[in-house]
View: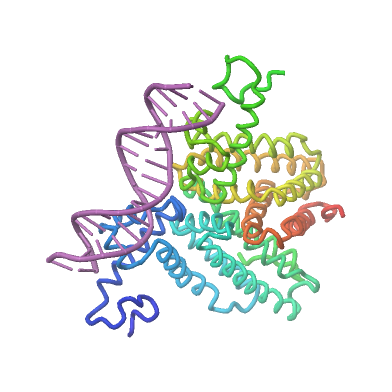
Length: 217
Length: 217
DNA sequence: GTCTATATCTAGATAGAC
DNA sequence: GTCTATCTAGATATAGAC
């Protein structure tokens, strides 16, 4: 089973079950998401996070040796949850990829904490000295590259219009997702983010496919 | 001349020239933009901002009675600078409006501090208790409404395809702008934000105009 | 208009008891 | 694994001198 593989190096080599410690770590990560979403990285407080979890700051620092360590762990954990979930399937064509992205948007709408956290951290990461700067650079490059590759394969297959700037389309799609998330975060209860994104994905697909087909109903 | 009308209520009724005070206020506002961009609202420090300007915290608090007051002043000042500049012209049609928006993107690329600040604050504003929450709600509604109105007028004039969801298109355009700004902020020197936005605006225009025309060269 | 001084509070991190 | 205690640093804001 090896549940702790690559996840909690500091407890390696100790004996007994890790179940309790893992559950505590998970609760800390959840609380951290909420705090980073509301306060951003710099103004989040380890003491307040600890209080939320129900432990002291000393206890929290046993699990994550610094605030930066906690941030990195939160981001890695988030990636395990959704980037892998939606992109490791290797979608066969653009329509499948776009459908997966709409699923991701719907999933994000159901997790306001995590989604708002990404809004905040993506903004903060523009500062080169920010601890998440490198993470977001890599993340955007990876995501855009993957979408670009799918579109290029469709172009080679003849379903996407020859001469299409696939990277521009992929960049645009990611930008729309992020921009809609910013607007959605202002009124999550009433804003239909997935619907907006579907309208866009449909229009984009129509404008680049050879047969002019959009998203499936 | 009445240079201070509606801008610095605390100095109303005092005598003499306001030129020195106004210059000082302007320098504070500039410094504040840089700090809000890097640290966000909560982690920005009045003491550090004062130090940057070359005065003490006490001196700073004479001009802006609190950090929240400073934030509000920065946002109002920013709006005076660009929203008015680009939207008060009342563009005659969609192409003119889109051209103005591309100008705005180019203008933003030349002011990384202000642009990154908006990235950060737009993210933070998702939190209802954030002092800029209301501001961003109003701002998005206003901007999207104005773009929607232009598109609807073109639809009535017969240059935009009947049945076009003008508000969806406007929402999308704003989302692309914001999303591209997030990506641009990660590498402002090399990322051609305006070029990316032009590609998008061209595609959008082609997909909604009756004659299928895009942006002018 | 800007200063100093001060009050009050909170931050992140370390050390060591249990 | 979690606690308490403590250190150093920094925060916002007030009051009043000049």
